[in-house]
Image 1: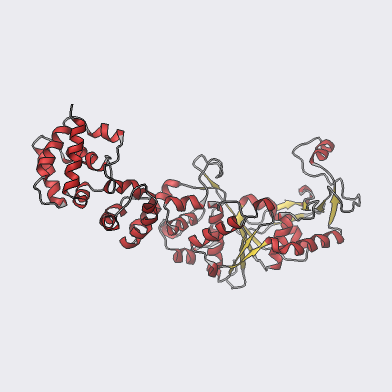
Image 2 (image 1 turned 30 degrees about the vertical axis):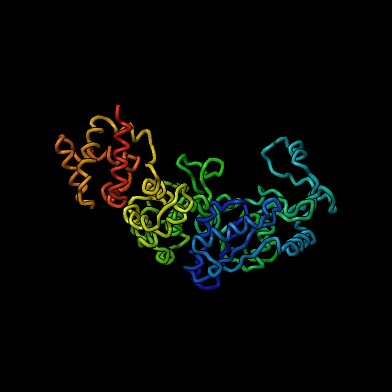
Length: 464
């Protein structure tokens, strides 16, 4: 890949109502490639499809990119494909005038009737009919009958496509609007695009777009078709069955830095098998040629683990600030001063920020949450006896975590029980759950009065 600043890499998403994690990965690869080479990232919104042309969806793309770190200062644009409709129409007319395109009125049904094959592409029936534009007549590009089209791909070498098997494809619909293939070629040429990084599902389009570039007098870009992203069943990620919207991960409490780090690992690896790598280091090391062509597994467990690492690395003040939006939407009022005390305890235990709500809710509710499974597990004999002894031991105990732990250890020792067994009914009585934040630090924060009241309420519930 050229290391000069002349390279211009484009990212061209379509507004679809959500920003797919695959699109986010492509955006990051484009961005890293441009930065590593000292080139320019060009953002173009492909908004010519009226059914997808929504300002809200376009804004969603801009917000998603900004969240990942790509604000307006990191790219040129955004350009809008719809603004270039006149250029697209002129290019279509040029190809028609050159004899490189022709009008066709064939329906899909007519093609199947002629060929007897539902899987066969267009058969070139209208090539020499000399049709004029009119209702129901699309404009098709005349592909070469002989020779080959070689696509230079930085990941896949030089795939060769036999021109004879490329069908004459539609470049303008009957209503005059151009298709994706022509619009992309025209826009890339007018914007000086030199490199295109996109998903491998577009590889079959590359020879067609390359033929359009050549017919319009341009030099095709260098391509890089990155591997498809698959789920744990090794099926391509689908919004119908998988969580694929970047916005959903953000709403769940994934940090932008962690998501960016993880997406870069989908097909590419930094040196020394590292997984937690700062963005600046990734940019220095990234080479699009090093991206693996095998399908990339979107491992949510690994993403959670990486996100947890990033959360634990935050200054506690930043962690607290990141948690506030989730606490503000929680079904209880919270005391910021109290949460400040819980934050250092919680920071080491959450993998995504939304987990903060069920982790600290007990501290802000009038009564602890009730989890039947936790209650049934912890409140077996001798739970009532332990709770009674704990209540007695805590009445005059110095109210600090270490002493509270010592007192409960003594309660257990008197009954031949280890601390884990002894603290289980106390934890459920006070917090409502069998797992959570460190128990004794939590008791210290919520105070003696609330702790004793909750233990007494649990004892009453256990009473025959």
